[in-house]
Image (tube, rainbow, N blue to C red; front, top):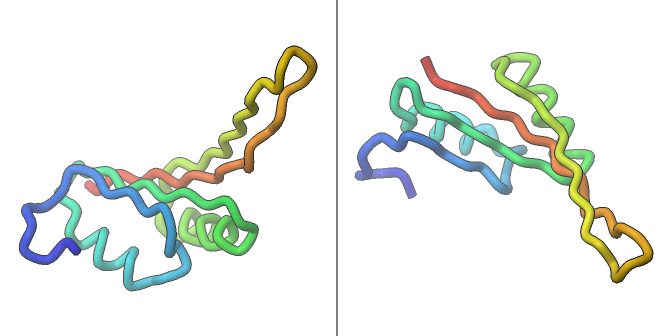
Length: 88
């Protein structure tokens, strides 16, 4: 999808974090100073982000959100693990 396009300022990987080709292609296409952000919700995908963080660095965070269910309680959504990298 990136072929023939100008180098992007940012790339978001919302699925496919297990695919090394997606990472390589995205990183190569990204312009200097650009940001690559990837999210994971499964244990397997989170493990891939942790491994990528160990080798590439970046900022790792876990995001938790809950939605009010009437006036009685909060219903938590799936927790998201996020890796954010800036290309130098």
